[in-house]
Length: 318
Ligand SMILES: [Zn+2]
Image (cartoon, rainbow, N blue to C red):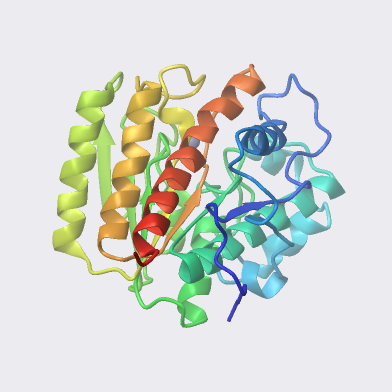
């Protein structure tokens, strides 16, 4: 089990300088956003040293909780075909391998911190299109499925609930965890968007194209009601993808900043009102303007920080 002596004053944040590797800035995948997000949170006083936890690479045995060892080895050693890399939409390098393992380690660390301190946020993660034996859509390994299985295997949870609010369906997570009774997958996504062949989550909720704040938040509320009736979890992994935003390059929805903030606050409050630990991952977000993209991703840690501080205040005896 993982122990830090003191409860951080600010929201526990997980990051690694390996997340943003050297990369063509014009490439479709916005690699710089992780560093820019971290810098932004430092400037905002949300990442302050005492609450920043640096992730280390996941081990192969952790990876094997959700992936075939053949696929892990093939990707790690660069024996991955051009066709597979094309499906991934990424360019293979040693640096990419390290980054990918470290991002998975980061989501596991975020879960451990959430278990200890109730709420934590990873400044990466949410690679939910990765399947057991192949990667898809910028997702090499499925950090959410690995972390969920890790929580069960290590006895930190008996029933994990994954609330995936990235605009794209968490197809890889649904498939990997389809027979795992102790992991419940819920995906709220745009009906018309990638992946075009959807998998079956335990609960799939499709949102109409161009839905705005009001419609989205109504759907979220009725989904939380359904979850209340369907499951009694003891842990929540929350993918707060910023690609639901109206300005996202690949999203099909029209949420404003305020809509994204209300979504994140509602999910966190819903889970925390049941005293469930919540591990947040930032999920997808796409824009040629990487600074603006980092700003949109910062809405999640900002909302989580506000909630964390509110609970801290309530915990201090008067
Ligand atoms: Zn997405």
